[in-house]
Image (tube, rainbow over all chains, first blue to last red; front, side):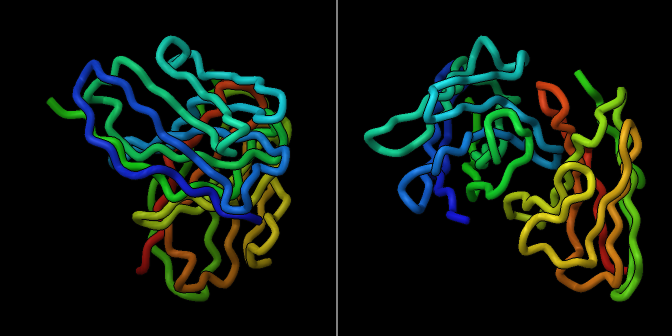
Amino acid sequence: QGHLVQSGAEVKKPGSSLKVSCKASGGTFGGHAVAWVRQAPGQGLEWMGGISPIFGTTIYAHKFQDRVTITADELTNAVYMELSSLRIGDTGVYYCAREATYLSGWFDPWGQGTLVTVTS
Amino acid sequence: DIQMTQSPSSLSASVGDRVTITCRASQTITNSLNWYQQKPGEAPKLVIYAASVVQTGVPSRFSGSGSGTDFTLTINNLQPEDFATYSCQQSSSTPFTFGPGTKVDIK
């Protein structure tokens, strides 16, 4: 299995937007889907949504529906997660993870995580 | 949304022990249940998927069982590298949801 490599830590102000990238170390995601999961400090894991890079199909958790956009870029072989209107409560670690098949629902491997701090 | 609960929230065990963690879904999810291991400062790692299938590369001392709403993760002959937090996750319907986790630490 290949590794997933995410972009680095970010510090953001409330109301701003965030864009995190996720790349497969082998160059492509091999037809697999990619999910995004976040973890607030000391809390459990929370699924945000996912994308099938080949088909461009996306699905979002309704909690984030109005603020999250997940995209795939064929040129850079990367998947991006953009979260807008950031709040203090969006602070946490954001993970991308490869999904066996689109909406199969189990995730492996995971990226190393991107720490996002939202602070005024 | 399907709510996932786990018990216990934490447990202390010794090397060589057998450990059992329980996960319950708020509605039936057939066998759409996955288990992850997470160590401090690290990303989660898939251990079991589809309730009982051990992910490639995971030691055979890990096993999963259950269907419907009640599931179990068992670790036989607990090893030092197994001390971690274990979370269940349902993949029956979106939004996919995770349990709060069970921390396994050294007695």
